[in-house]
Length: 296
Image (cartoon, rainbow, N blue to C red; front, top):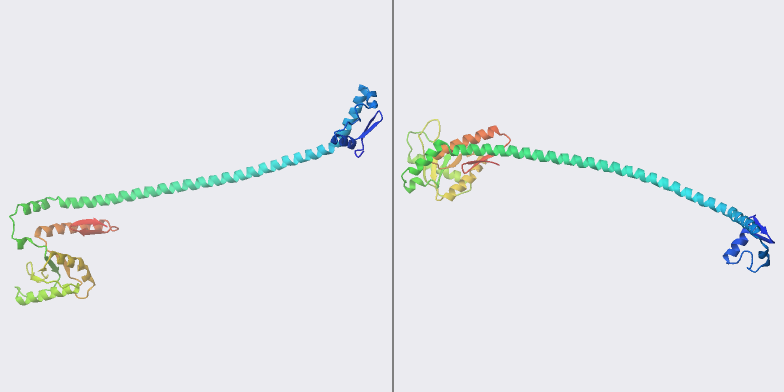
């Protein structure tokens, strides 16, 4: 046969191809069951024949087994290579995870630092605010201020024209004519000058009762008080007063509401506190609004 190995006995000669051909066709290897030659085979001779036939099958299958073993071996090597690749990939992922953990820790540290900075800023602002409140409250409840309030409350009511200062406005740093007393001519000059200032602010308010107040001095011009037709007109001029700084002829003129002596003293103390706060806190910006110091 093609295998080069035959099993012979009792007149039979079988090759591997013969055996496989009969097996595929589901035929008896030794012919029919009634074959006379089969009946002559004793147990010993049959065992020897089976042995020869087994050797025939073994030697034929040996190359196939070698090929199978090679395939199995190659598969194991491939698995080892794949396992090695997976281990390297796992190590790479572990490194990435470590880097991400470091970034998370860094971000947490930055967030914590930012939170601490915010807390410190808030604390500083609260301390500054507390100092402002404390200073203003101290001025508000000072003995002299309380006495002024009590005095105003206990004083008899004045006439309407004496108590209504809301329509008055005061002009400072306006030059004054020489002379011991005011004359109609000096009053007229002052009124015309005040009207020019109002015109410089693009307003045409009617002025009445324009006059100098205070004791006349050679060293300093007295302020001028003028009465307008309404309190709203006074507020308008006070809001626009800063525009005088940009004019050529009136850049040193200042405007203020008409205050009582007590109010002027109170204003004076507030301004002193205001100046001290600005000197102690050069990075802060303070303003006075309605007699109260505010940090903006």
